[in-house]
Length: 323
Image (cartoon, rainbow, N blue to C red; front, side):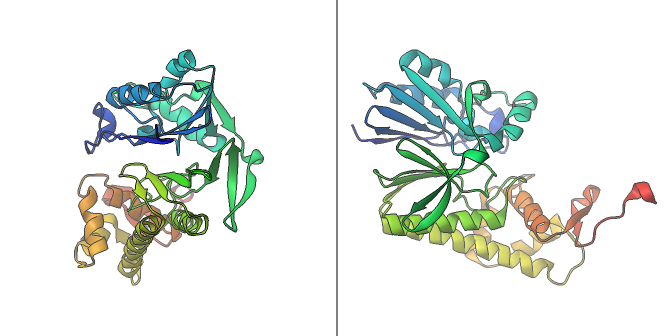
């Protein structure tokens, strides 16, 4: 049996994917190193859950299991109810989660409207403290994160603050979750500048360490250093093209609406902009709606009129309480 196995996510795109059983789950990956099994992302939905448990059953003579989610988002961590079953099958099971994610996971679990069964495993989590982060020099590059036996949990924020790229030096394999997802971040908690920095660090790691397996969250894995490098470069170029176009849109304005920004994007013939518009726009809120909000926030702009379709200005709105 190969040391890496893909359990492919169930890809049924739906604007309300969290309310539709088995839709838009992330990929899960199983990595075996000796008698230790690493599960990368638990995914979401009962179909994916049953497929994941069936794949795990093929790994015999395992003494220890680690469940490591690349980040806390529901489609990557919603099946952490498998921890109970793992506890029946294996002598030792650990669910390791960056402590920074707790502030998002607990409120989400208490307020979620998901119609599918969801359990992020908060009750069984072993929290990785920020104070316990280590510095790692890999391929001459400095990373921060945690080491869990054969797995490096490298902090690569941007898509979310807790986003990890999980690297296995012996396998020359890295699992990046949604770090390399175009129109990224697609949630308001993200950070465009950070995600581009993370992508660049992953690409340099691939080059310097000879990484030849990239396991992405929602797309087919890529094998071969050159193919992985080209894939990341393509992502970086598209992301920068989208940012550059938005810079042009707002350059001469002191107030813009989200609809205005989207209208101007539709005027572009740039293939990256056309691709961004094709992903899930005009669903509301689309990834582009969220991306534009993050873009404007990072420029220091403020939302001055939420009722007018989201109008933003570089000027701080007046404090009405003081008027």
